[in-house]
Image (tube, rainbow, N blue to C red):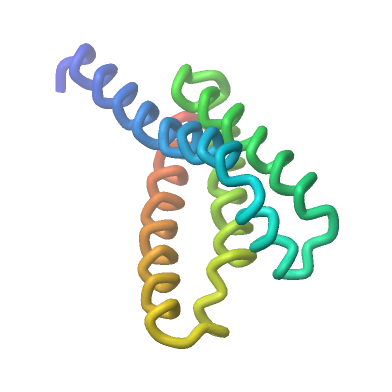
Length: 125
């Protein structure tokens, strides 16, 4: 593959993965109350602070991934973030249908995103 094409694909992949987290983080600022309530309902203390801290991390790490600033660390951090958020908020094992099916589908998508982040981290090391 041509180096230019490889560079374009590398940037496009980082843009899509990082952009997903930046957009999600920005979106949280518009839905603070319901997401804070969901986190609090899981028994997390200081739910609003946890949400705001996680959102800030999500945006900063997403931007780092997009711009290629320590992409391996950004990708690994976002993978850990995605795992934690999935366990915390997508507890399909405690849900009834149809919420269970929706949460399971989101888990599957998150696993694919985590896979992409791990590939990105491996490529960046």
